Image (tube, rainbow, N blue to C red; front, side, top):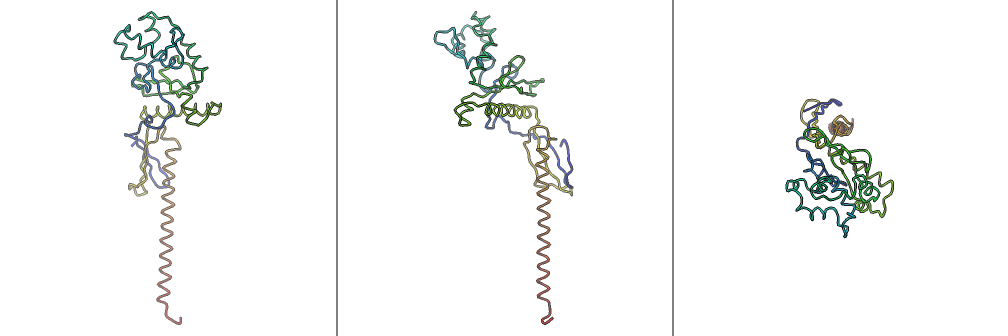
Length: 266
């Protein structure tokens, strides 16, 4: 137990949820692509650096068939040191040093190309501390990658399919941005162990059936405590209604008994 709150004679005991469900098991709109080596094992699309992620959405102009970056890396794999296999796609520096391939699309230009295409929307993400459990997402949609550990993104086609639209409106774009930010925020709470639950004790200190788990975020906020208080309010109202009904029935029985025992003719 980490805290208690008193409300209308009841006690709300707050605990850390030791068995929370990962938000990544939910039906999320976006998905993570982590590029920092320390958290790249958490990536959800198999891509482990910014260049590889960007070049999914633009072709390589120096190859006759406009072969995508993914195919090029397969073709050049024999030229690259085996220890780089562990990290998946290769960075620009890997190509330049190991296979002497000219940097044909600078990172800034590649970012701008993808941004203008509108084929994908993203918020950049950062993971802090020794265990990389402090996960944050930027407020700006389609921001720069400098100093970031990855992105949380959704492709335009998936958005249009989800909302049954044929074009991306400004209003829908803003809605998608808020959803992406919200999903990263919830995952950040989960990664940091900030998932809670509560148990309610009655005025006599006895256990009740009132409890709930799986609240992500600050347990001081109105949402979790609001749920607990709503349950207590309902219980108090229910108990009062039961008492009133009991008194009413007792009174009716008393009246009926008095009528039976009333002497005739009186």
